[in-house]
Image (tube, rainbow over all chains, first blue to last red; front, side, top):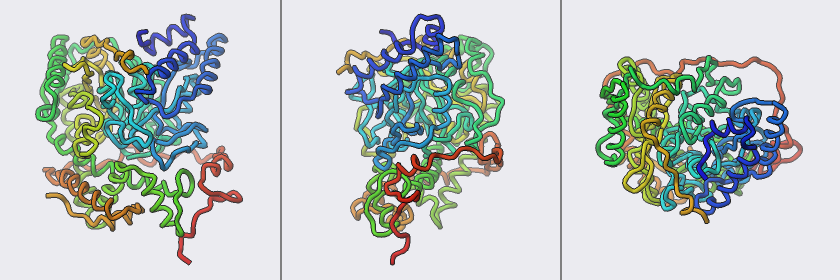
Length: 487
Length: 95
């Protein structure tokens, strides 16, 4: 069965062509067939989801119509708090934790009548680019079960790619929505910082973290973003508004738009198939009437270095809350400090431990200015570079990831090689601007390639306009062969 | 050149009770990562003033209104140890 888009399902739900229960059962059937191999989910909430789907169908029958999300099977990355439903962020330190509250995005989806299928796997505390850092085992890519789906929102990406959810939420701190979207052939959006509430998102790096949707196509992603964003008094960094309409320019095309190709995002380390298809797409945009110019953003060359100081620094502070006292794991210790030190050493996996140590060092006396302070200056310089570029162009484009999905285990022994997976996506987190990954084709091995569109802050309608044109040109309709991953 | 760090000091600051082998492992890895991260020192010129929020938000306050708080029993049910409405923890000071 072809995977159904959210937009089509929303129409079918309203004209009686399908029920929410039927959509959910189809998603659960895919999960039953594929989860043993893919492992997109940590928790599937069959009972809760069925109750929500039945409620949505009753609401439709009564003429109650809250939102495009009503009756839609959705999955949530497991770093978003769900009341009474286990939320571990893929960490042993939170194994079994049942939050006493819902994250704002979860509250919104529930109020809108969405059907929450379950909680998806991630790299522990969203730190990683392959979903191999999960304490509960990796997720595998539905396109090739020997490969990873990217990360850290690899479970959400794999669920949408396989069809065990119609849409999923992820979080993106350095590319954790866009890179897995690219590697699994789906659309992934990192919205403007501050537009989607972080209340109830288990914090990794608060100045960079942003929740966003993963979906089958650009329209679905734009619809889902429109449903979840908006001001939240519970998040002090939340943008008060006004919020633009995410779907109003989807069909506007690219004629007359100025598209900048980033010089720094290409060359050594980029797969030839990725570079070729991205170049061909740029050529096609020219044929559609866009004015394409090459743009040099020299600070992008040191963005990764700045990111791997700023993100660990913030993580070392945020993860101080895991102290064995209020929730989660506790190891024995005669004093509070001994208990905390043992709890944290036993509860955190290697990548999280590495980043806490890195951040603690970067913030410690004597090194602060040379590392963290200088990284913040680089961050400002990156924003300056973006601002200068947007004086000349409307959007910037690049590959989303230098490579297609890599084989499981290929980068686990070399942290720096893993970090390079995010080289194209990190600049938008440092600037706070929105970016989206759109699938544009398959490489010679049959693995998806993603194309990134970056736009100025709050220019999501323009970003989706270009993304939609890219999608039309690419005509990407390939799907993973689930017969190969069915157990 | 890899950056040399006092890993025992950093681990203590981070409250991570690592073994000697683990500390040596992380010391080596962090040295390599920090060598790469030190490239931030290649920045030329002085950037514009740093801002803490990309949309320039400052001093966001919500109305000071009394609302519902989390259910105490539900919160304490998640604690490793609790009694009489309190979290229970080992002593912070050695006796």
